[in-house]
Image 1 (cartoon, protein in one colour):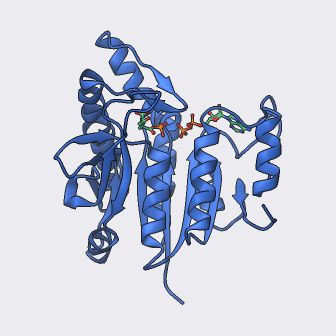
Image 2 (cartoon, protein in one colour):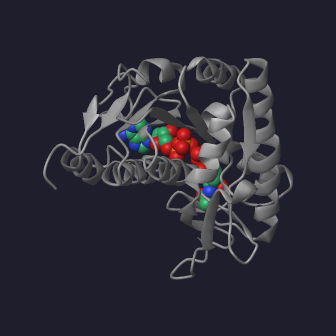
Length: 265
Ligand SMILES: Nc1ncnc2c1ncn2[C@@H]1O[C@H](COP(=O)(O)OP(=O)(O)O)[C@@H](O)[C@H]1O
Ligand SMILES: CC(=O)N[C@@H](CCC(=O)OP(=O)(O)O)C(=O)O
C-alpha cells in the first residue's frame, strides 16, 4: 500500500480573515503527514481590484480576467497571499515553499477557448507534473500552490483554486493514497443554507443532484463539488469539505461532509 498524502485547499473567505487563517495554518503545520496546500484568494483579489478601480465580473464561479485583472491576480495570488501564507507557515516550523503553477513547470494549462463567454486569461488545466511536486516533498519541502498556471506559449493564466486542488490530487494519486480536503468558512455542505449546523455528513451523486435541483446547493459550492466528484472518479481516495477550524478532525474523517461515489448514477 502506498503512503498517504493530504492535498488541502483553503478558500478566499478564510484567507481574508487573519485570525481564522492563522488558526488554520497552525493546524496545517501540525498535520503529521506529507501534505500540499493549494490556496484561493478570490475575495482579496476582488478587494484590491476595487481599490484600483478595476471591476470584478464572475461567470459561473470563474473570474473574467482581462489584462488589468491578470496583473491584479498575479500580484495578489502569486505575491501577497502566497508569500504571507509561506511566512506564517515558516513561523509554525513548517518548511513551506510558495509556487505558482509556472514554477518548476508544475501545472500547465491552456487558455480557455472563447465560446459564449470570453473569460480572457483563464487557464484550463492540461497537465500536473507529479514527479516535480514529489521531488519537493522528498526534500521535506511543503508546496504552497497559488491559483495561477502557465501555458506552453508562455502565458500566465488565472485558474480556479478548487480545480487546481482536484487536478493536483488526481496527479499525486499515481504516487500516493490521496486525501483531498477543501477547507472553507462553513462546517461542510449544508442541507439548510440558513442553518450553519445542518451539515450533510455524506454526499453522493444522487443526493447532490437532488440538492442542486432544489437550489439548496448553489453558487461556489457547485464547481467545488463537481471537482470533488471528478477527483474521486480519477483515483483520489477520499474527499472532504469542512470548516477551516476542523482540518485536523477532517483528516481523521471526523468532521465535515465526506464526498462518496457509493450509489449508482
Ligand atoms: N448547501 C451549501 N452549503 C454550504 N455552502 C454553500 C451551499 N450552497 C452554496 N454555498 C456557498 O458556497 C460557498 C463556497 O464556495 P466558494 O465561495 O467558491 O468558496 P471558496 O472561496 O472557499 O472556494 C459558501 O461560502 C456558500 O456561500
Ligand atoms: C479563474 C478563476 O476564477 N480563478 C479564481 C482563482 C482564485 C480562487 O479560486 O479563489 P477562491 O478559492 O478563494 O474562490 C479567481 O480569480 O477568483
